[in-house]
Amino acid sequence: MIKKWEKKLSIESWLYLILICIMGASSPGPSLIVILRHAVADGRSAGIYAAVGHGLGIFIYALVSAIGLSFILISYPKIFSFVQILGALFLLWIGFQILRGGLSKKDLSNLGEYKTPSSSTTLNHFRDGFGIAILNPKILAFFSSLFSQFLAPEQNFSIYMFMAIIAGFIDVSVYVIIVFLVTLKSLLKFYRDKIFLLEVAFGLLLILLGFSIFVVSFNLTNFG
Image (cartoon, rainbow, N blue to C red; front, side, top):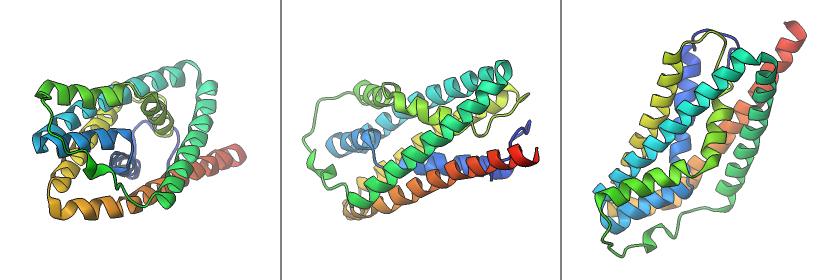
């Protein structure tokens, strides 16, 4: 699934990375709740501004993760292998947590309760979206774990930048789409009731990724 030590990412790897980013952005969590409640309380534009702010925070964390990991990869390759294993374990743990949450919590029933209009400005919406991303260290840990499986020696900076841009752009795009959907009353209930299916799928995808990393590492150890 993931080929180690390629200077350029394969199309398969890019598509897999994009899929994880899409499902990660769609998965229920504090960020999604904050953005959707802005949309429910203050309207569609409020949710969009919050989504843009959140996407900027995701871009920053993704870029920091890629650059930091590339430094470890070049300077301490043996440590990087250890980081990859830790990343795989973290992805497995996150996957199991998300899967368990998706199976036990079948909806977002409290999403529509926060409807009181506020006097928040555009800057407030953007700030809250940015803040919920940049103040969550789990996002940095997630991208560090995820990107560690795709980086390789002698990749240039443009790959790291493109990975970060993809993460930020997908985050904004997915949240904007969700904001549009939930501000249509006919779709709000359907989204709340069925989002757990996406959460389960995302958890399974992360578990699959984590296990595939161990399989690749085992094959390299025995046949490398």
